[in-house]
Amino acid sequence: MYKSDAYSLSSSQATPAKNHFLAWDREYAHLKWGGPAPVRDIQAHLLPGSRVLDAGSGNGRYLGELARHYDAIGIDVSLTALKASRAQIVRSGRFAEHLGADVSELPLKAHAFDGILCYGVLQHLFKEERESAVREFHYILRKGGFVLFEAFGCEDMRCGGEISTPYEERTFARQSGIIYHYFTKGEVRALFGRFEVIELEEVIKEKTFRGETYRRHLVRGIFRKS
Image (tube, rainbow, N blue to C red):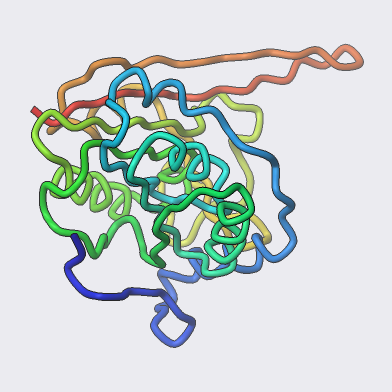
């Protein structure tokens, strides 16, 4: 399944362009466990026992639930997050493999997976990295395999801030060092151009608080390798 036996991103390996990856170890050092997250969408498309990659698995909110039904592997650039994920999954009595890796350079063999879950991950990459990640997804998926995608949309109230370096449209740098990119629906369609589009939608929710309207905007998609 693996191109190599092990892979991890350490500070000694990082280049200035990868500093936004290293920021995640600092982030996960104080992030609390938010509880399990549902995986109903992927269950609608994959049979139990399928091999599934959680691409950017963080501290295991989705991975733990995937492990209930699938042969699941979690990949993340943060070794701190992976350590927390392992501990949480052990406490739940389940098992999932964990691998420290960058989703834009996956150390995985071709046609090894039936499905990929990628929620809230590509929004934290630069354009070249996003494109590389999607090429990697295509490479490791079997024919007929699915990618389930979700990321921030450009109408989200949080879209804005300090312009990223290097500059990219609708891409911002937070004080934490983490990159935030906000997608358009057309951009996502183009990004997954090698895939068949099964679903592609925008989800907009608005809340009013003290007379101010706050908007959350997500772009969600399900794509199949034909």
